[in-house]
Length: 318
Length: 318
Image (cartoon, rainbow over all chains, first blue to last red; front, side, top):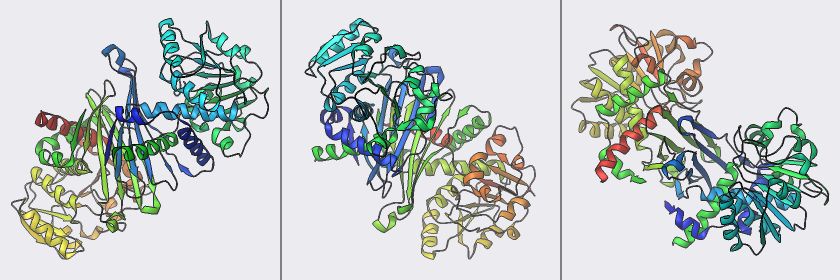
């Protein structure tokens, strides 16, 4: 059994085209029903504003599968501790034996989440993206833009966050990572109105993006909401856009942005990302459409990302 | 974060009175609804006759809780590999951070399962047990008798298994562990007719114990069945005994012996072990009653056993 620590994982695994292609393949297999995806095991710790999730998925034909334990305890900052932690356990799908412990403290979740954002943009954003926008200045605001750049090499990045200091730090850091012009926007509205692609990455519980700011050609990826009470998108938007996509319907209607429109929106009209990557359904068909994708995160991404990381790290550690 | 290997865990953790008391307390808390017990996350691998379970439970007020990953792949022996494997991950209930990895390969599951058997016998067997019987010669057949001896110090142990060689090895090993006379029985019937307490520990899929063998004062603990297709007990027995007990009704009626009598048996008449340990209901009330307990295994046992082991091992490793 291999044990990999966070530092080692960070050293060798980063956002690249390969992992985006792998995750895209995962969504395709999900649409083709080649994946066993049991419901998430979840436990809440309301006293400490905490939750623990266990996710898993088995991609048929793959030698291994991952079980991911991830926890979020949102008062941890008071103790000077990180809010998010966790690990992935990779098991053999033939013997059930543990092959590797990936003690990543949530890093691989960052990677696989960003990769899913890139898959969404690849199929839903305009071919030519000049301006990308991001709401939020945390880790996902960083990796989402890195991943997006690989599929849509934009020239300008607009960023909005409530805390000016965080925005400045974001600008500085991202300027060293991407060869683009980074502009600190004054408002969410400015980001949305001026961007071709917008990614929302906040834990907001009230809508941040309003329907009147939509414009032809816009694509929005909302990845912040992954629990019933979270919301980044004005519900009206789902009535106005041309294409509504999500990762897993059952999950998005329960935990994602779609949770807030589950009574108004026709579920049959919503497309799963894998239906597009597998060419069963169309994504964007012209430059004028407005599209949105609601991502809640699936065990498929975890299994694929863990397996990818394991194979890479195993070779490095020999 | 502490990491403990199987060898170290085996060295310091064994069946003793303390762990039995702890597990008993867990059942009591379960009955008092002081435990969050999410449903088991399970994935099947029919091609390899395999399954993987993830169990967890949070005992309110406890600092930590365990997430247990356990797998059983029943063709592994062809490859010369053990069928069962797995680990327990202990997390802080206050921060979600991982406190310890207990890489026990299922050893702590053996311990906590045997401890539950002892709790059942403590409350359901006659006060004086002269003869204990066990069906099966595997690991649980060993630890169940060790645990039973701590609550009911019997004088004679009757063992039955289909493979004579395994029975002989069992006798030899157990003679070195318990100061009792060990007799190799000729049949399941002989074990049942001559014993005061019988524990069934097999993965049988057909009933082994027949109703006509019951006799006054007998207690049976059936711990082998933990899946829909497994069965050790003649369904008629549940109609004839005086007291029917299980660990968790919802689970036993789905996965345990009670699964096979779910349409005939009145669920309200079945008692949960914790209702007895918490003194809400009676166990055995006289020496003549015939009692049975169906154990399927719960995450509560895992959390309590992992926490117990962690505290012991942490002190040893300092």
